[in-house]
Structures are given as structure tokens and as C-alpha cells.
Length: 103
Image (tube, rainbow, N blue to C red; front, side, top):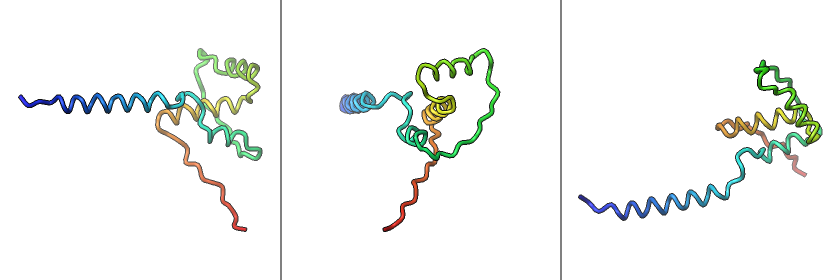
């Protein structure tokens, strides 16, 4: 049987490196900085989202309570939550950079 201890050592080293990288990552539930920038923009275009959600989740009541505690507008709460969820599932927005004008 061939000696595979060298490969086992390499795999342990790789696992240690990956663990070190993961420990330095931000909390995946934290909203993305781009999302904060968009929401803080004064002239951000907004669209209406209308989806039927289960009443048992009490989402409207929970959003109102969170708004009362945080001061974050209802629409921004929904935008932050959905954006964070969709990014975590691999669906980031395709953001375009604002065009700059040459002097």
C-alpha cells in the first residue's frame, strides 16, 4: 500500500488555511456595503414588491416592531433582508457603476 501521509499532511494544512480564512469573514447575515450605499442614496428609484406571505410568520407585525426599535424604514428593512438572503444563496445584484464625466 502506498504511503499517503504526505497527502494527508497537505490536506490538513489546506483545511487549516481554509478555517483561518473563514474565521476572518464577516457575518454572512450582515448586509452588504453596496446595499447600505444604495439605501442611503437620496434619489434611489424604488419599486413596489407585492407577495403573499404566510400570516403565521407575522412578518408585518415584526417589521413594524423592528422599525419602531431601529428607526429603519419598512421598505429598507425588507430590502436589507431580501438582499442579504439572495446574496447568501449566490444571487447578487448586477450593479452598474455610476458614469463619471471627464473634466
